[in-house]
Length: 136
Figure 1 (cartoon, helix red, strand yellow):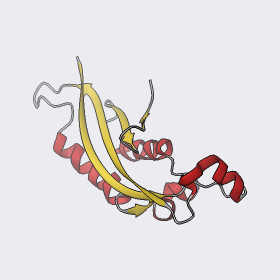
Figure 2 (cartoon, helix red, strand yellow; figure 1 turned 135 degrees about the horizontal axis):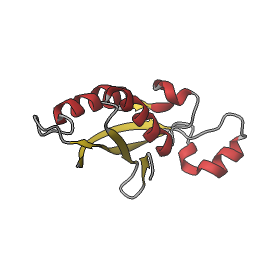
Figure 3 (cartoon, rainbow, N blue to C red; figure 1 turned 120 degrees about the horizontal axis):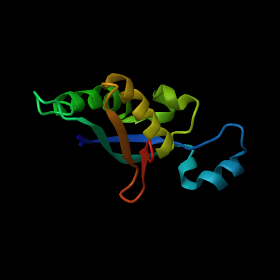
Figure 4 (tube, rainbow, N blue to C red; figure 1 turned 90 degrees about the vertical axis):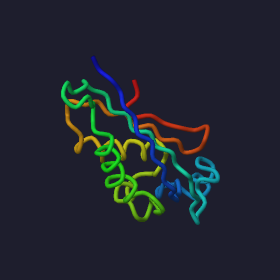
C-alpha cells in the first residue's frame, strides 16, 4: 500500500520575466509588472510530496528529517533570498516563471531520492497562484 508524505518549506526570491529576443513593448505586454527591469519578489511556499511503500521495519516512506535536509540543501540554500535570474544557473537561460521554478526544484530533488519513490512538487507563488509538477 502506498502512502504520501509531505514537507512544507518557504523561501523568498526575486525575479524578472523577460525574453531577450522580444522588444521592451512585447515583454511589457506579455509579462506586465513581472517584467520590471529592477525585478520583483515573492514569498514562495513549497510543498514536496513523496509517495511510496511504507518500510515494514522503520514505518517510513522516507525519513522526514532526511527530506527536510534535502530540501534545505538543494532548494532553500540555492533559491532563498536570491535573484533567480542572476544567481541560479537554471534561470540564466529560461524565464523563472512559477512553472519553471517548480520543474527546476523537482529536477534538483529527483536524483537524490530513492528512484522507487514518486515525487511531486507544489509551489505557491502567491496565496492564490500555485503550480504542481508533475501534473496528473
